[in-house]
Length: 112
Image (cartoon, rainbow, N blue to C red; front, side, top):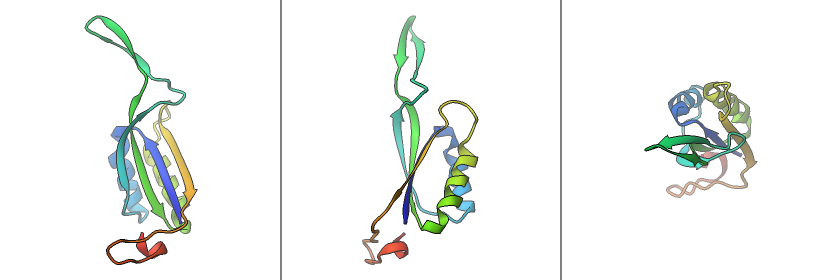
């Protein structure tokens, strides 16, 4: 099993969710996060004063999938989240040792 963490622009959440559903991925965890990369934030003017916004709002998706679904899931996220502009986000894939469904005590891929 693999854990996929994707950082995307907030307005792309519904498109990404639908794209993952289309490739058979149902469950995910979604968090509102803030951060920056090469984008390094931007400046804004508020009541005549200029200030820097270092951390930009992003959405973090976390999902655990079977090894054979990783490619389809990552491709779906890229296709749905890509705008071609700076700040589109990142995807991280890592190995998951074990998963346990608390309610039924199922383990491994059966738990996800």
